[in-house]
Image (tube, rainbow, N blue to C red; front, side, top):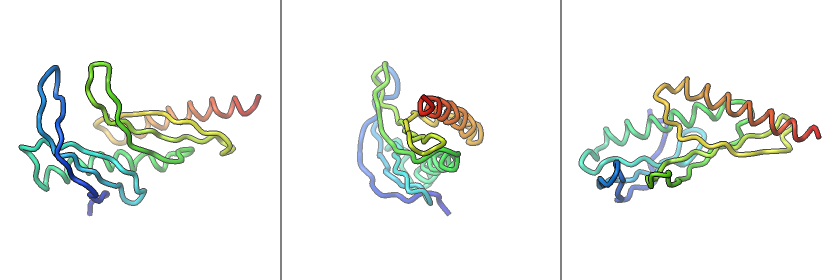
Amino acid sequence: MASFRVETQRQGTELVGGTLIRDVIVVGAWTIPSNVYFEVAIPRAEYKKTHVLAGAEIVAERIESIIPIPHVAGVSFTQDVTPSGQVANIYEITVVSSSGKSSMQIQSQLTLFDVALQAQVIADEVNAAVAVLDSVEGI
């Protein structure tokens, strides 16, 4: 059973390096059970159910692996432009302090291949953010 559900599909283009552009189908989906929206671009030439399943499953698994990390209050999807002009998928992770009175966002592209390693990297970043929030609350 997939850990996501597809919500939308639309045609688009994707920059694949310096000036190479390819046609893609952008699939909008929601993770299960946490209901976090994300998008995956599948090259139009490779667009079939198996590629959508594979691409979206990887992203959903990465998102769902960080939801249970202590002090993570939520995850949201956004996009930004890199210094080289490419669009990047960004995940904003809302972190709350130990008291729950303060919060801040950290960003990640969630691109590490190993899901467990990705979750550990994010956990370390969350812990660092909590330490900052807690120290400011202590002033």
